Length: 543
Image 1 (tube, rainbow, N blue to C red):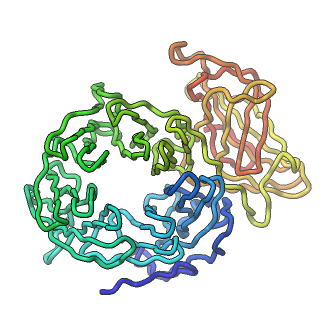
Image 2 (image 1 turned 60 degrees about the vertical axis):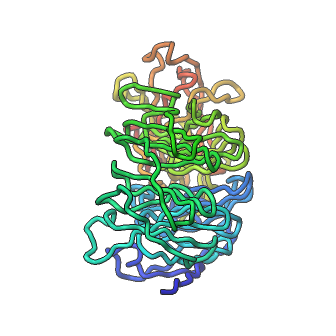
Image 3 (image 1 turned 135 degrees about the vertical axis):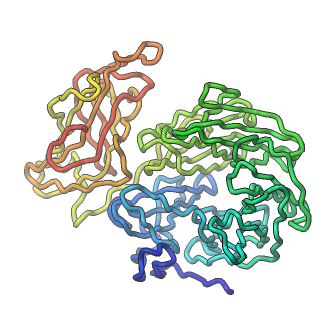
């Protein structure tokens, strides 16, 4: 069956392709290509994630509205490392984000400025050859495709279920298909043999090392997961040693065609468990343990006891996005023997990294699950990527200090626990026209006349990924955000070095920035002790 070309401008698809619960046809709102992206361009609380950098300047990402149950995902493009973005076109999948974030968000992988792939978890695969303006669905022999790219070839596995179809497609055998990059039809497909898989036959590509050498793992995360290799583009197969005893194979990372890293993980509950990193300079014929961490305290090489997704920069630096609620990023400069925790303030946005991309010798961008992104150019120093500028909401501009919105600190309340002090931070619009505020602002404790940052930025409390828009009426209207600060004296000096601050720097989407004088509070120099919530109408305390 021939693949259909989907023209993305003014795109419409039957909603049944996205969810069986919907029956009417959906149409992506038209947005002029090249439009500068603001936080209202695609709907309320427009945001972006899944950043994919092609160089230190050029990159792509996926954007969409968060504050609604149904919207559309759009491809966006940057030419200045994320400082600003322009709309390319809607993607061929609608968004059903709802109040809990982008659980069904697609992923993008561009192999050149014009050729890129779009995938969904256990979903179809699309390709573009014109920089994302149009997308074509890739023809696959089966379902649940996974793929890897080597040079100008794409190797893809898909599960081919024959009748009677099993309840779990992981029991279906898989085919390995070969495509030219950018093509929608396979050059050839071969069945992947059962070499120790048993009941669980479904395979996924771990990596395509060369135009003929491909490594797959059968089992779909089951503990019995044989790793297979072909050096004849699927004509013959052999079995590799799998060192992940009692753990699931997660990822194969080739340092070169014969020197590999392999990650394994076993979930022990609460997003923690046993994480292992193995190395084989012998092409998978012999493995040695490079790093290990588990929840019982065992630690080799400094790796954390969570699922690690590893990305390799061109200069050899390894970055690992840490799974679980706490999240974070760690890095290694010695091919995985030793790991260090990077100073990335992901806790401002809910913690766990959602995606990471590398570029250049040691550059990377990491995006958090609740839509904050950070970048590094040297592998160690991370800076927040500027959030999207404010747009118009119901014809109104965002509130600013320059247009007579004042900020003040409300009455203190004792929080829970008792060493926490809660305040409403109150915004009063004294201007002649109404304005709006939205979302969770960035709040940084500062000191001195030059407003030097002290301590970590405030963490977003009880973040849901939604961003509430609040209209602040003219001539005295108010809105507020709940703010909480923990007493630095509650911590030992070995953990917390107290530093005095006297103000808060508060930023919504640009150009909405405020400066608020505070009492002389103590915060920890390197540990975040402050928390902030989304803006609300009137005056409300932190809760």
